Amino acid sequence: MKKWLQAIPQLLLLLLFSWLGKAVAALFHLHVPGSLIGLLLLFLALQAGWVRLTWVEAGAALLFGDMILFFVPAIVGIVQYPWLLGAKGLLVLVVVLSGTALVMAATGVVSERLHRMGEGERHDSVERV
Image (cartoon, rainbow, N blue to C red; front, top):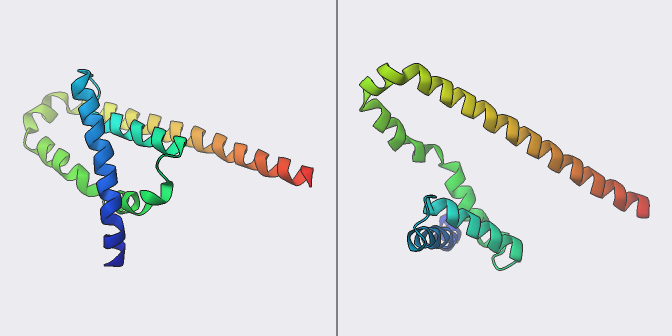
């Protein structure tokens, strides 16, 4: 219960950034999802120090823990159009698998570089002592 009470204001802050992103997308007639712009705005606010990580951490963890639920409507939508999968099923499978592989590879490369950068900083600080 305490976790939910702590997460509610954080979820509202995350929703505020999503709403701001949607407003920016509508105002400037951008062909980018507003939620993605909101995520970028949140990232910039975190980097600038306007928003602290502790202000959104519990809410984000709560959303991340239930992320699979956000994909259920998309899966149900696909099941409603079996003719689409029949005609383009192999193409959809290739796109999904290659997209997944690219995301996994990019994530691996980025995390490896970040890990190396972190080791370099620790190594530099040990040499200074």
